[in-house]
Length: 148
Image 1: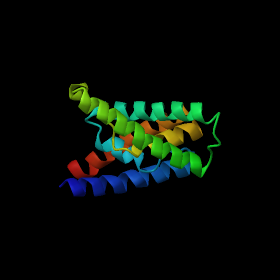
Image 2: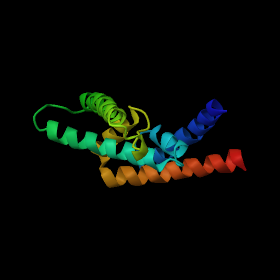
Image 3: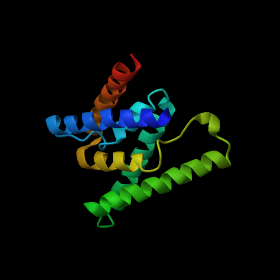
Image 4: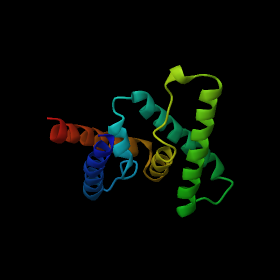
C-alpha cells in the first residue's frame, strides 16, 4: 500500500513540478521535494524541521562561501553533504537528549539540501511560495484522483 502511494504521488508530484517549472520558470525546491512535502502534509513538524534545516544549511553556505570558492556543481554537492551532516547531528542530539517529544524531524537527509540549493539560487520567498503551491496541488490532486 505504501509503495503504491509513493509511486502514484511521485508521478503526480513530478508531473506537476515539471509543469510548474515549464510555465513559471521557478523551481519549487527541486522536482521531487514537493512530493515529500505532500506526502507528509499531515506531519507539520517534519515539514518545519526540513525547512529549518534547509535554512541552517543556507546560512552556513553564506558564511563559508565568503572564504571558499563554492559555486555551480561544487555548491550543489557541498549543500547535499552539509545537509546530511546537519541532519545526522540534529538526529544525534535528539536521540542523546531524549527530545523525541519535540517532534523535530526532517524529510530524509537529502531533501533539505535540495531545498537549500534552490533557496540559494532563487531566493527564500520565491522558492517557498513555489514549493507551497506545488505541494498543495500535489496533495489535493492525489486525494481527488485516488481517494475519492
